[in-house]
Length: 179
Image 1 (cartoon, rainbow, N blue to C red):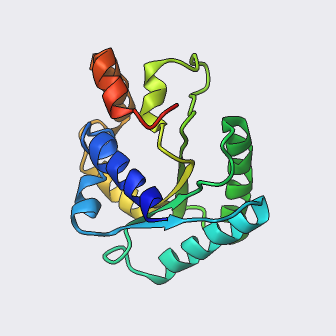
Image 2: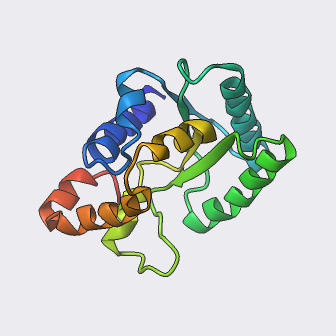
């Protein structure tokens, strides 16, 4: 379990924060407000229960204590299509418990592929993590962070440009966890 969390922490520090793919991640990381949890789920039902537990915990804790949570899924949803389909259940869970507008769940996966992109396109690297991850984000915190940005819509464009600017050697070094 420690190895899994360490791998995700390294990915967060080196790629997400190191390449500035998420301009909001550095502060909560520095302030120790990011929760890393490994789910041992082998079924969708158990994984949904683990996600619900994380959401309830975040609902009960102030952002100053837990700003965001990464639910790491090492033992299932390794196929990106299965993972993508599971995200529909995640959305239903948010609706069922009236967490829409309070939390959102961002997605990261070792085989992440944006719609209408080639599977080998470097822009997919922006969301490729060592394991499937459900990233729970507080909507209010996100809204506040976006207010302080001059052009928040440009973040994804900058991320794509960052990936295109990396040499093949640098990509291989940074993303060595990908098979």
